[in-house]
Length: 113
Length: 110
Image (cartoon, rainbow over all chains, first blue to last red; front, side):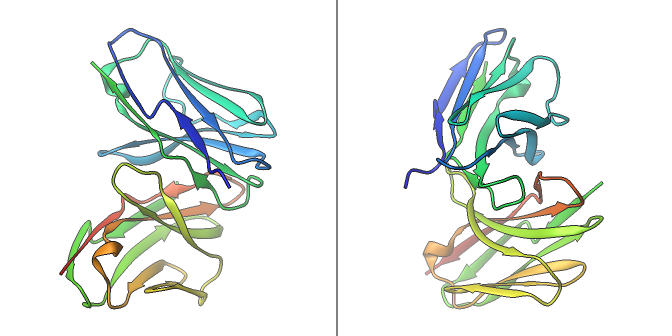
């Protein structure tokens, strides 16, 4: 079975550019989570969706960050404009429902110069 | 606010040298404590979920236990392939999010 798929795996961009990260959850899972991992703060939840609807976006750092889930098999996390402090590894995770175990993708390593 | 603290930050063991990793938590209404393993450059890989004090779960050389204040991940006779960062996370109250600790970096040498 395919796990959570994320793309790109690595992204290097310049400050001010728009960055779009993509995620395909495990088939049949109806909850999707976006996390950010840094050395200083560890893994932190940014936003999660249940049945394609955003439920909790309290972890989104600021208006430069936005996330969408247009259908059950695809989600995007967009940063516009990007800043060097956004450099981190961004993980997508999915679960059968919001209460079940979350399974993580391989992550996107973002570097903003 | 939910808090999760893991110790030690890093641990170096020789192959076969058993030890334990600690995860202490402060939450209101624990609904689950999760252990994940993370290898460099990869996403966290699910290991265990514990739901109530006294519960124990085992997988190969790993055994997780839970009390009302902390969880332990016991590693028996570790091998070099057990080297990874072990993350602890909690789910509490009505929230669906996981609150993670900062992890314990385990290195097992020959």
